[in-house]
Length: 141
Figure 1 (cartoon, one colour):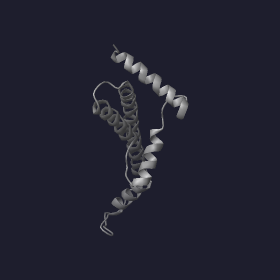
Figure 2 (figure 1 turned 135 degrees about the vertical axis):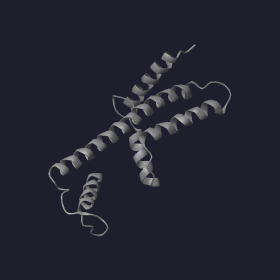
Figure 3 (figure 1 turned 90 degrees about the vertical axis):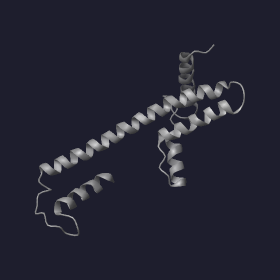
Figure 4 (figure 1 turned 60 degrees about the horizontal axis):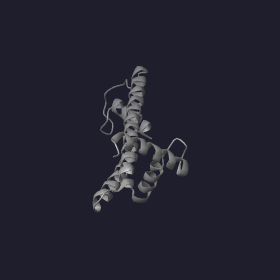
């Protein structure tokens, strides 16, 4: 009988083998390029973690589509779960980094008194609001 640890070890072995065959020696990393291509073709904004989730669901569907046990589907599903977790963590870390960068830029601008000025509305925005909008738009590019 295969234990949970056996599945984890086999999944790690599969990822390393496929990484050497298709991607990089450090393991499977093709999803980012697949998601980029998908998003360009469809105009959507799928994330890498969502790409791995889609493949994990595919393997689960295949596992239960016919009677019996499908070892390949089980092993791949475990590998995709690990890749999905890694990608999701990277997304959150990147979001936090972006948020920190924006906060630092705003703090820097506030310290340099860029936001100082009369509160006279021009075009519906005060100068302070205009400067803040310009700063955030610039950082978002």
